[in-house]
Image (cartoon, rainbow, N blue to C red; front, side, top):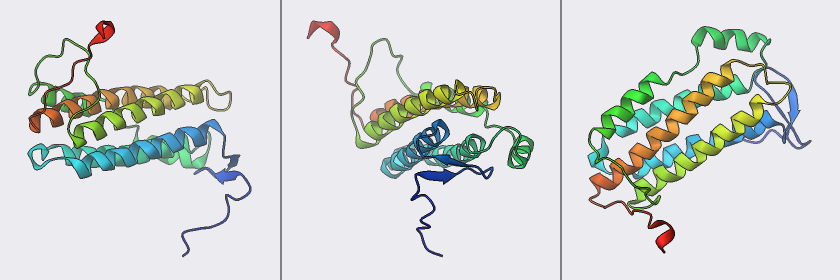
Length: 191
């Protein structure tokens, strides 16, 4: 089977539920951001030092959940494909909150704004966090689209993405701590 199909050469692409939509459709923008997010999380996992061995399985699990979220976005509410997704459920936030709580107990309290920098793995986690925030914004745009606006699943997905960005922030801080790099505090308006 060839990697290319040519089916997208007409400025359209197919959704999981079978419809063809333009490549500038809000659903495709959201799916593209989700793909970038998953790829950036893969980069974080590849750059993690051995001292962060508990993080890669969480990142892999997150990538799998992002694929499921993509399936929700790529199906219309009343399609047969959506009925199968309903039985499997939407990824929840409780697991991510537990991960954040575990990591945060290993970190000093944060009372100032920090710059997204430091170790390579921390910088990659900060980049993934920023991509996650953009993905969430794309989903909010999609939620106001007349075709998708009534999809209640998107509200739960938005909360999941919001919490995921918090987790990636904690991962970035933890990577810097494990690498022995002090966080760079933003000097604010005094510069």
